[in-house]
Length: 119
Image (cartoon, rainbow, N blue to C red; front, side, top):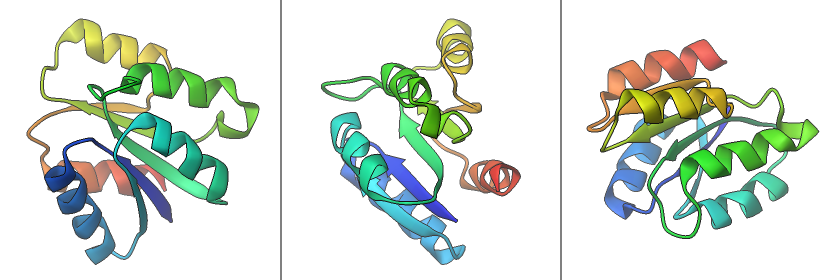
């Protein structure tokens, strides 16, 4: 499965990407949602997006809403995560199209379980 990791924190982006690659996934990464929109347009058969909520230019919730507005991405699962989770943010994320919402710091094993569930 092809996974897109979107986070402006380059260390976390790299750590998530390496972890998922070690699990056998093909990982693409972007430093912000605008770059991610380009990756989504270029990469065929993308199977999952994992994105931070708080990013420059375009936040993860708006990014999710934009992706889901395109009929080609209606069934694309999206996992959003945030360093400042609250019930309102999690609820909004899910209402705008995210499949799952995780708090930071990310529990990699829990993330892996969600990735496998999304397959």
